[in-house]
Amino acid sequence: MMHSISRRHFLASASSAAAAATLLSHSSLAQDAVTDVPASNRPGGYEKVFWKVRPFPMTAVRLRSGPMQRAQEINLRYILSLPNERLVHMFRVTAGLPSNAEPLGGWEDPKCELRGHFAGGHILSAYALMYASTGDQAVKTKGDALVAELAKCQKANGYLGAYPEDFYDRLRNHQKVWAPFYTYHKIMAGHVDMYVHCGNKQALQTAEKMAAWANAYVAPISDEDFQRILNVEFGGMQEVLFNLYALTGKQEYLQLAQRFTKKKFFGPLAQGQDDLAGIHANTHIPQVIGAARGYELTGEEQYHKIADYFWRECVAEHTYATGGTSNGEFWQAAGKLADQLGPAAQECCCSYNMMKLSRHVYGWSVDPRIMDYYERLLFNVRLGTQDPNGMLMYYVPLKPGFWKTFGTPFHSFWCCTGTGVEEYSKTNDSIYFHDDKDLYVNLFIGSEVDWKEKGIRLVQDTNFPEEEATTLTLRTEKPTALGLKVRVPYWAEGASIRINGKTEKTKAEPGTYAEIHRTWHDGDKVEVSLPMKLHVAPLPDDNTIQAPMYGPLVLAAEMGRDGLTQALIHGDYGPDDRKFQGYPMPEATTSAKDLTAWLEKTDGLKFQTKGQSKQVSLIPLYQVLDERYSVYWKVNTKSA
Image (cartoon, rainbow, N blue to C red; front, side, top):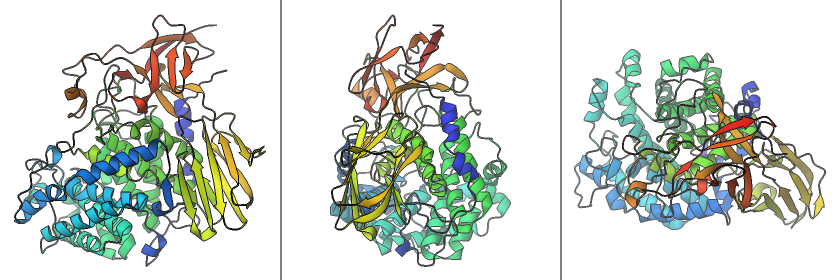
């Protein structure tokens, strides 16, 4: 029989192990979500808290045929198409250097106060992450060249920006200004990524000079006044400064990172209080990532409480069926989502940052259900937010009858454009983890991982989610004893494993790891069956509003293209509900004993309603590009 799963129960239970975790074993070195700094780049051993498992370096993982590789290739073409001379233009203008380049538009326009966040920040991270993911020399060369040009724009005092330093005078004087430290963080983080992933020492020097400027700016400001300054969005300043400390061991970076602690936000979280209502979501998720890094580098338990509690509470009480969070960029009261299905729901930056935070929580706990949540985000709110030309989305609307909108090549550069080009440059970063003796398969993505220390390579062939299975082939020069742990998702009831054609008796229960311990020979094949079933994800405050799902995939009702034009689909943040009306939420009636009886699978990943007054087709949300849709349905039940 088709079954229903309580969304709230699943999401809350996903962190049960994380909630119980305290100070962890020191057998593994933590790796940060952005930089994935390998042990060789941590000369002083500054980590105090170690992950129980660690991700393989992206250089050891390569994508193979499948939807993630296609997305990666599209992204590579786009980021290579952006001319460095246009990216560096406003940095040169700010530094008083000549430039004849055509300015970029959108959020990189010369009049936009956030200029530089993408052109000198996100794009460097994307270049660095893409190089680590693919080994593409052209993207490294482009990144190295941009680092060199930006270094020419850095002032003697260390300042680097595409806007003048007096923006920070306005910030200090509590005058209106659009988030200068937010942009400063992006630029610093891009340079750190270029050092970590491309070995660019000039990039590290630039980042350190920028940190010195920030330290000189902050030093004379009282703690009380600086807390007022922190009311203006400052991105991941704390995180990048912690990362600089992890790379260099310089105490001034540790101390400066600790100053970027917004006490009125962290205080309630440390006490286990959900005060998120009315707070701008993506201003604050990066701060929690900073707390996670603070915990790993200082061992301070308060940082752990903040990051762990926030993750659990946000996922359980502020998250849609897709895994996305925020409406109109803000959070509302805990568990109150029925009236939050807006055209500006699910800001893509929030999903990007929740995935980063999830990696930390998972590393501390090794709870496979955290990867269930990660998978939801990856396949519902990340995959499908890129069009065939590499243009990216700002919001993923949830208002029935609205549609997806994408940026343009040279006139958007929203915050979500930046996190988008980063995301599609590192889709191989969480597929595989390991400890000293076991290899963990967390995501079902065509790829291969080379565990050089063990002399073993694992090749994963799958077209998941279009295929309800994956095949793992072990390549080794000699027989090798190794534990293989394959995540069995919460949705995969009836999962099974065959080794070299023979059914394995290993337990494969949903929400756990199927563990296989044996000596592997070259060519051994592990076939994993991952049967998907229909189920529903109701809203916590109205269980009659439900999102139909198939495995990890949220299914969207296809509602036609009436009135849609290229101008409406490309160039704006999202549909404006002040100008355009949505459609009524689609309705269905079904048996109380079978909440999915109103749906049937037709072909591949296509579905349609059954036994309803109107037949409607449904497809996975990630496949929706240029049509109206609805994720949620009003479902009325009747007794059998």
